[in-house]
Length: 238
Image (cartoon, rainbow, N blue to C red; front, side, top):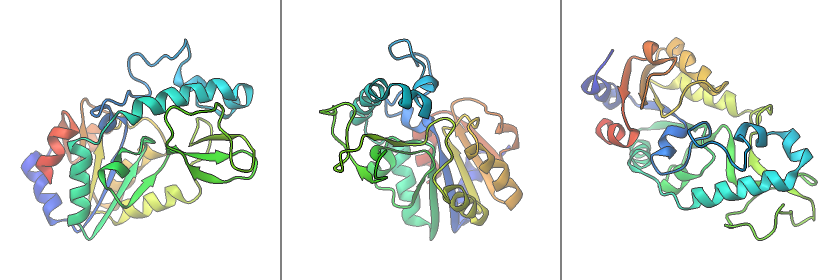
């Protein structure tokens, strides 16, 4: 298992880098993780609300939950790990950030090339005309919110049981296949297809550097595993 100095050397020599981020990097900014302790809201689990069926049954209930989540996220600021990834993007000729997070903190930090696998909580999709539009109002003045066409809007995120946005996974795989170093940051590596990018990177010949508070299913296969906060490790790597 490589150490920090070895990981720094790999990164320094690489011209092409890809990074995958998960809930752990946002948790360091105070955004509660989906599956963490206290993951109940009004006796509902997130997995029970973030589905097309739940929205079809009770759009108001689903939007009340998303409104409360948006209010929590609106208080959060990017941390040292987010900023380190922005710095890395500036330094590398080819850099792609792939995120499972929907909170927009990477955008706020200044990252440019972001593939948002699971969408963006600050965007809405019209269920009638299909429009995809931004909305950062907190709290929402009307629940459920509506589009300019009059149709009801839904959150612009990927729900359980839904496919990723078309072409998104192909683009992520293309970036990972071209990467000499693949950073895996703050993800439990249990949500697919995102978790599948880790063995994909290994097969493509990339050095895989994992940064996480605890071991994951892929820790043993990583070329370097750094246990601890991303906000501590990433600035040292850059």
